Image (cartoon, rainbow, N blue to C red; front, side):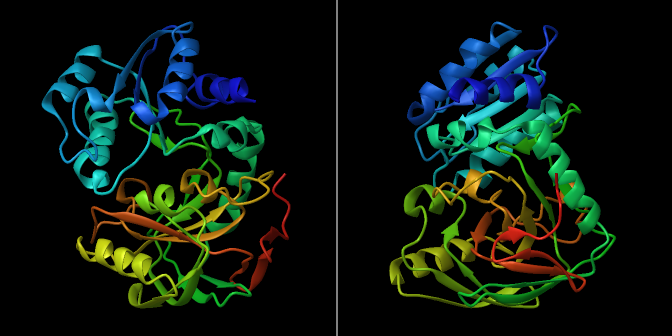
Length: 333
């Protein structure tokens, strides 16, 4: 299954050809994955791998000049991030790396923050033609939505409203155009909502929280009014304080910037890794960065982005049920 995942990355997602120049950014913790992809990719095109620790200490609090120069000198046409993520690295390192690769160098880029062997053997080994089809079928249902209601048996109860001026995006795993990037594994449709009101019970958090805490033993209840967090409750007081403190570090860090529905069918359970778990069939929100380059949001932004994942959700798009207790009630095949 691991080999199938590597082939999916190279052939079905990035679609490397002999004309490409491919750069892989990895780290010591995920060097086995990075090297495995490198060995297969170099059979297709000129390929180079960089390890973050060769240029800076972790967590990376800067985007090293030498790192930028070496990548630029290689002149890649396609790129991959296959490494862990640590606290504070999104605004100071990863965002700058993505901007360099996609905006400056015009690469098609796949981003796999926190990728591990479980992901390679499960979500990354799926049939990506089916993932592409499911995400686009779901997109057709969501693209004109005005209101989505979400509930679950754990206490989640919220309503999100949408505007046609803000685009939905199908994360289908195929960054065909240069200058475009996506997360892998793929399989979700997302946008930035106009407003969200209610509460959400999360069992997993994004950014560095995912690797640190995994699936939560004690959930975290987040109350939202007019898209901003008004209160947070959890039996895990340390996590509650850490979550609130991190969001307060950034302007708009406590504002809903993403509403998404995962559609990576075939997954059996959450594995404690946000990279894959956000694609699990269901709904999730994220606070912070609204992906303006994809959604078209123009009037606000944020340097942080923290996802929150409920489970066993039911969802209604303008009154029509599409999810019931975590299972799709519509055909996405």
